[in-house]
Length: 280
Image (cartoon, rainbow, N blue to C red; front, side):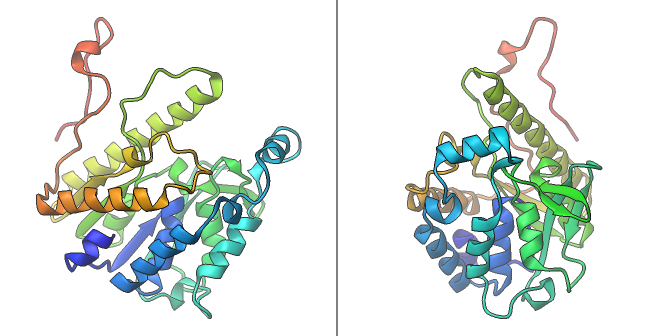
């Protein structure tokens, strides 16, 4: 975002899911370069205790015996509320259009916050950041809501449907290649990652098939590869790497181009199979 602001590219609309929901909400309060620098400083000042105040052994015990995740939302809620400017509580109080996503575990549907100006920012952000296994789902109207990334990790279609004509998709999922996976949990998590990556490809494909849409896709996920969710010691390093990656793209932009597949090469295909990727 720093690189975009430096080029005079400021958002009219922000769409966020998971951690992107927090960043998008912060920026939507006043979408300027100065706000973006305050956002960076906020993350630089954030420690693991701000987000995960309990020890790991307690979280594992909770998930195994009496919780629906490693932790509840209390620390997240407190930290998020602290970052919002005074009086900014609803979508209608923001200076830029904001959309946040959440997935309903009972129906499998994706829900969108942002059209109703009276919708509460705290409720929406907690639902959109409720990463399964890590945090309990948010209970709303008797349903369990989780991180919108479960259904749409890079929700480009929302931007298209709400009138965007130029989209900068900042994708934080690692495209691979990945090491050999061992263990049921590791394989399950990686399988979820494969699912969300395929979802992102379909979202990009839809943008490329729509006339009048300019899509800039910037892949940032490999910057976070191998870094534990509870490791806040490398925040400055990741910010600088993301800044460099975005600057490199903006120096030589390639809009409306599908990303190159970074997984197995065609020569590694199973006998009798070919590598399939969507084509226009």
